[in-house]
Length: 328
Image (cartoon, rainbow, N blue to C red; front, top):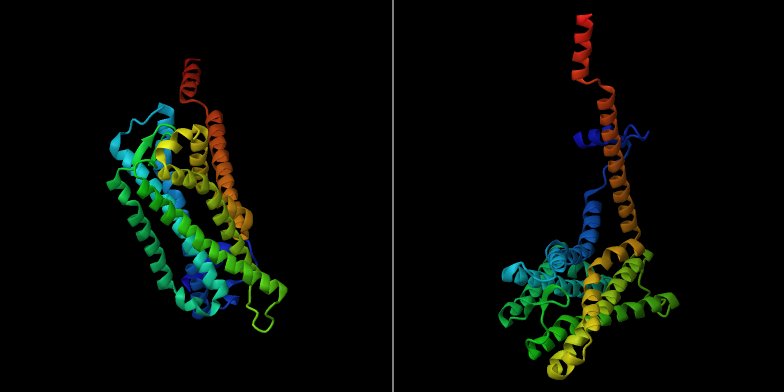
């Protein structure tokens, strides 16, 4: 009753209908909606966290290094920055792989989806992704591959430290996940084509437009990730195979461009969501309107205070006038 009264008080001024006329939704419907949102979107949230990791700590240190034309923050900050940057990169590709497997099970194996991706299982999958990410990045601390590179003004993975380790990184952290994601999305595209052409009319799966839009969004996220990170990984693979011959032949502009191209990928996902997902566009507009409204409100308040200060006479002037009247 208290919640219902608060809702009426909050929206009663703008709407003429009463909340009491709306019956509360049944608990099973709330649980179903929560399950659908939680099981799929938790992977998107995890991917967003992976993108934000580099923005919180490593990128500000890179800007500091650029302004000072060198690294002057010490060894510890260099290792932490390189570790978090690797955590973000590997976490992104592992989360993209988890999203692809999730979409594959949801669209191609819909009957088993609820069992495979219950709320508890989905949370366990995300925890597993980050445990594997942490395990994958820890060897860098022992190999000594996190070093400052003056060409890109950041502490990052040095591809020439260990050829065997670089090959393992490229295979397990890029090529293998890309192969898994490609398989999942190819299977989904085949099913989508079959549904559109009605190849299996008797056993046609139900593919809703909303599900298809979500699939396209995550597919674009995967494609852009592969495009942005492929040059750097292939350079690393070539360096690992024959470092003495390949390293002198790699132009510095190519190496720097591939690194900053990979860094830029962390900024793309939010743009993709806004362009391809209506819910994200709606929330972006709401945030922009809220920020602009707050800015106008504070600006009007400051102007009003300034006008009051101008219109209010100064105590010194008032006292001087009083003294003149008394003297007269």
